Image (tube, rainbow, N blue to C red; front, top):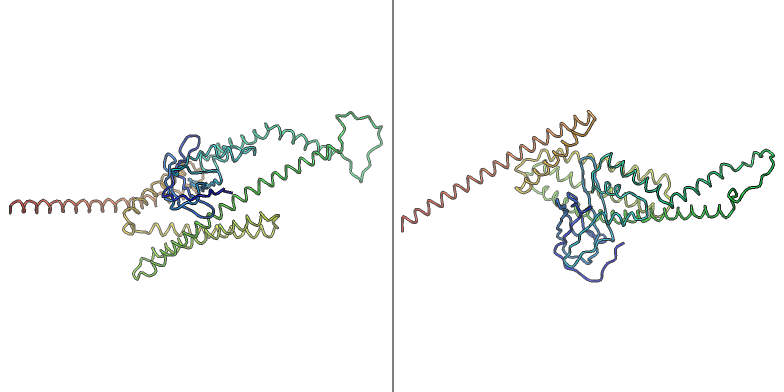
Length: 400
């Protein structure tokens, strides 16, 4: 939970610098959140720098939510209660220090968190190295060794203890040494250790669920804004008489996509709330699992439909800035697909990627040609205007 400071700051912009081990965290979409309200978002540049128009902030303490879409996965992270802006509304977020604070005393590998957050390379080798580091850390932990010994001793006692049904053979009783004796107090201390460990584990899980709850509440408030904007755009297009049907369909799909995404966040939030209340029944677990699966399938269908409609969009339907941005996005997507094509070993995946790469290349060529044509038309217009200006200037001089 965040501690709110009791003074108001009328900030126009927030400046962030996000680094991991001194290197800028690039290409992450970062959202500034305070409570359940969002104050803007942006994408970090190559140096991890970002400027966000935040409007009015009620506190210097903020929380950040970030995401990065890679060639094979989507990485997400949230930081709450650890970030405070300075007097110039600037903060340098050192992710390595934040991760160390979060994993302190848990035995979790820093590399594993860095991969999960999209701060470092995500490859099978990197994941293996991070997991091995976690296991090695646990094995080297003296507390873990001691607990492991005690648990093994307890298990040994349980296996050696004879059952009530069978009677042990009569053997002469030997005197046991102090090291061989296991007293009731030892049993009690081991049981206490296990009980306290279970309580600690429950506390860690509860903290994780509370953080998840806060993140989902922020996502729901953001999705509500997106739904309002997309609904407004869809209604405007519906009012136009000779509207392009592909554009109208695209606006409708994007509106449905935003609504479905919000319902997914709400389902996840209800699931988290149910787990926070206590033990969840098998029936409830299956219900949420099934509903989330259905929502994911629906989102996948809408995503595919949106892709098809975007591919139909003509260059002249974009604004100049929109077309330039689309060309840049397609260029990034093309590089990502080409990289996936080189690294994948599956033949079926290669065939699919080849088709997608060919389609992107066609679109890029079409958009670039149109943009070049528009620039040529503008250049000729300017040249003609200059000729007219020079002619009128000469005529005025001759009259004088």
